Image (cartoon, rainbow, N blue to C red; front, side):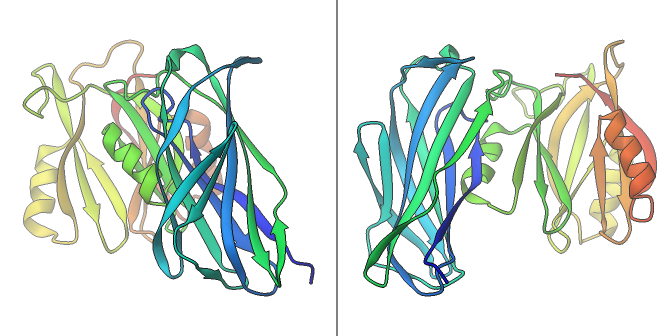
Length: 302
């Protein structure tokens, strides 16, 4: 078997592009048939306004590498526009083993000047005394300015291992998941709700959406019903109450849209969507897994 490395994007999230840091994770898979040492990840970042390249200043503020042996400290070296991230200590990456480099990048200039970021990246290592390098991969993403931690924006994640979706308005929680939890794939901003007030509650014109978490199934549950919330707290220890997730209007505006709810007994959790096409697809394709429970409350489109 020819010696090879495979580079892939685990998470290259655009969500922090208007709220530094930019978060990037690069996976380096050893497919060489033997151990690899001196593993490193190389990348360059380019910023664009449509098709126009924008000069932009940034620095690597933090980085780490995780593999089966744990998380190790890394160093970053910059040559021109190229960064090289490598572990401080010597490690050996066994055949079929994966190393994931997580990088935080602080953006130093006006972040409203661009709407697209392009990342070129590859992996390098030593195998059998020879240097091997993966093919250069590219990830280009459009950046939506609404994804700047805008108050009331709800973000969605997906966990393919457990078929779970997760929704949050907490931008710090979004950044933490992107940087630290590779089980969750970021799917973007999905709708708008009403933010909590300074007392972390809802104003009188709004009602709270309560959030629960089941650690056994890794599922979240959201309900606008105070009675259902109190019942779960009192009778079901499997569900941990996590507080108010966000608020929704008592009286929906004419432009508001319904959020639809499904329930899967086999998965032990709910699925939510505002997308009529996604709702119809789940109803027609996954009816054996999900029972449609209808709209549960109204939210605002982005």
